Image (cartoon, rainbow, N blue to C red; front, side, top):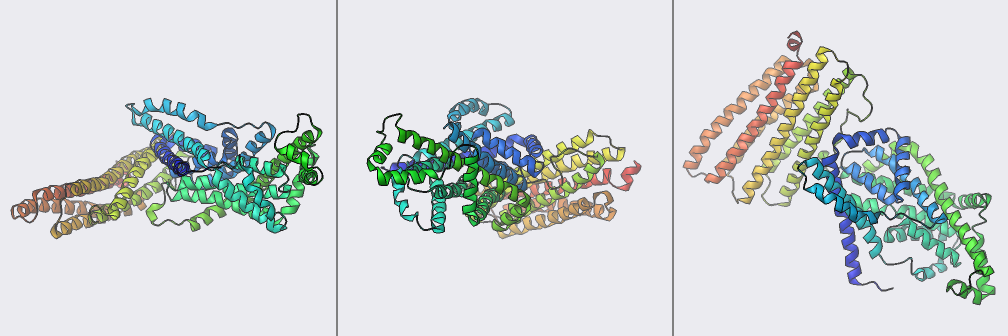
Length: 608
């Protein structure tokens, strides 16, 4: 087998295409899905059992647990599915992958999804030129989906062709007589082999060849299949590399699920193998352990027939060939049975431990920053609406969570002002701010849609006023988030024009940020107890707004004088005033939120 540098570069390119497809697909989902796909997925994964069935049917349909778990990782990455929901789907996907093994055992047939990749791109390209942004996002999602499967297909193409060169594994015969040590060795071989060739189905085929040639016994073949369950988790792990913390946790949960399942199986390995042999015999497929004994005996007693058997020169209809083919079917059924029973028993145990998996992966993959925790509405679920009046309370809590997130954006914007231009820290902080602005857009849409659904129910006049007030509040808070992003964009333009600020400008900007931050904290205080907002806190917000406006006016006047006195360049003064205006707008939006609270939630509003 020749494997050149060009093949290695092709493999790296295939992995790159796979990761890029994952990124484009996830971003397209985030833009296009809104709350629609969240609601569909929420209904499908409302509890661990429906989630498990979802994973099973998706994997059985597309015949690839790697592909279905990669999609789950992308859903989590896009904030469309929680970590707990993803674990149930992944458990179901593991059982679904046994469907593929049975198809191979029965028909030797497998659906090639990559064949649909190019037609999918052909359908997606026109969507990119559509006027509606949602339609463009759907096109991006389809292209990312196609790239992902093209990458998977190319990875399989560019890895060393081990399936056509089984002689490479002949050396493993040396490790077949070490007792339980051999089981551990072959489990590890199954892990590594599946990691390399990116296909548990291909590992299954190689295992069948090795078993047929009498190189390994049936129990060691089962150990290889057991190892392939861990090896197949490398694809979602690769996919999560370009994702966020939640995506990495999902991939790690998949690995942990298969790893713990392998541990308990190894603890009762020989009785478990014998159980599967008994089941295979009971359904009339013969004893899968007999092939190794027959082939070993044939090699010792009739070496000529043994050699002709595996170089393909035995004539069709030969008694030995017919017997070996029948025994190969028995082994194929036995391995499929082992794979199926293992996953079913593993599922029946692990499905009750979903909470443990979530806590374990959160500990194993901690968030570096609090803001790294990905977007999920905490109090509003995708389930069926209950009493509308009670749902309003949930939405009020979600408004406070939204406000906290926007306040974190304000802190990021302030930190960005003091971050060195063109530094790595500036790029990272700007990217985080950009990501948060996108999240705030989605939160506004989802909360607004939820409130509109509440409004469709039977509501009191007070409830209707509360919904109207909250719709206005959520819009104003998203505008604050836009202003925070606006600070980043102004700083980016300043950086591109090689303009610098002096210490006086930084001091004045900090003074503006101090006032806005205090106003934001006061707004959050009002949101934390929105239905019992104190008049004193409302008045404090109005006072803070006047302070912000007064400081803005003072800084505008001082800016003209400073430019005339040559304290800084005219261009620096332009960017400085742009920042001051942007920060002052935040104060306006904050006081608009306070106005809505006063108008729709205070006792005076009830008398109106």
